[in-house]
Amino acid sequence: MAIQIEKVDTGRLTMDFFRFGTGRETFIILPGLSVKSVMGSADAVAAQYALLAERFTVYVFDRRSDLPESYSIYDMAEDTAEAITALGLKDVCIFGASQGGMIAQVIAAEHPELVKKLILGSSACHVDIEKGSVIDNWIEMAKVGDRLGLYLDFGEKLYPKDFYEQYRDVLVSIAETVTDDELSRFITIAEGTGGFDVREKLAGVRCPVLILGAADDAVLGPYAAEEIKECLKDDPDTEIYSYDGYGHVAFDTAPDYTERLFEFLTK
Image 1: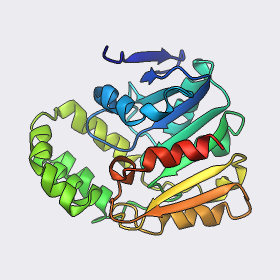
Image 2 (image 1 turned 120 degrees about the vertical axis):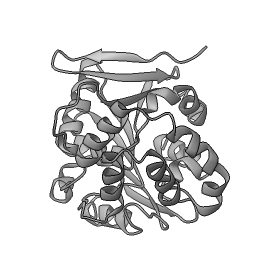
Image 3 (image 1 turned 90 degrees about the vertical axis):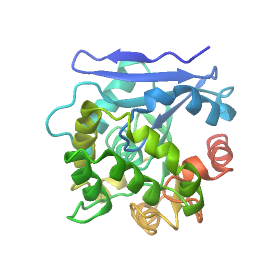
């Protein structure tokens, strides 16, 4: 049976999410920046994280449905924390991938009472979107409607070379289905990354943290994970591991990624 997309209404905002698993504990996934919503890949995500489904009930959240004109990472974090609270969830374990990891850091720092454990995948504690940067180039391509160029650059920047070449035709096919509304939403969410800097707030994190980096990260750079670790250096419960050869999206390409998450979550 296909996983159903649900909507949480906090009274101030609505946000799509889906859930799977039957466990007593709660595990939340905050996905990274994308043109196509992760809501369209619910069954694939459930299959990818099937290892967690017996121990955890897994929730995957989108960004809010109605985007404001300007939408920062801090806004995304507050909205997500509000959605989590509206669903009655507490003592949650959060995994944030890429931009989702930025959102997760803010939630853990500003709402430590909500978060039991924190996992960050290919994320960063500060980002400067400068002209010519990877994210800035994506924004510019989206603004001029260059769907093909955008998806091909995704492929080159996100994936290992062999993986990109193998799935290039798939990316081309997906690019052809992108709507104007999806591009507009992508631009707003991508621009929200500009000026993100949570370094001084990380001292407010009170839970164990697992940082998973990527030595060949062409989006946020190879040292982003180390910088997060440095900000959490006084926390003895912080662990770090760096993948190499799996690209920025090691969370999708490394074969042992889910097992590494499960090991940390069940300690």
